[in-house]
Image (tube, rainbow, N blue to C red):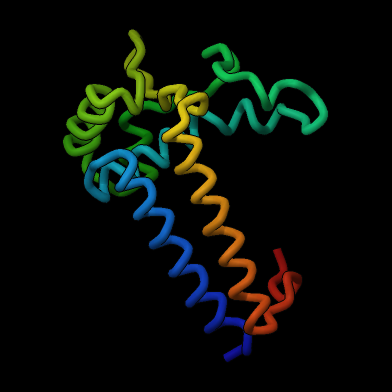
Length: 150
């Protein structure tokens, strides 16, 4: 095997476990709900972030308008995650009851806007530190950043 595969596998596994732990600790929920929350957050943030530019003030808006944020259906969550539709329906409602997602009148799901909250900021910063440890772990094994072609 290529010399970079085992270190990448180990470091990626370590990173994923740490990120899952952070989210589970914050959301106080099960693994399937964390996966659903990640799927919803990706769908919510992707349209806004793909349009945002680093030098504009867009990145510092605490609560962007819903019309520039994305949303996702529960059916699409089930398709993307492989979690049954009934589990997705039940768990998205539990996440909504906990204030972690919002379900609109058209039954679309968005992540709640919590980036302005200190506890959530600490979780996000913890995730960033985990990513930086991932990079350091690969550096320690001498894995170059361009060893895998996109």
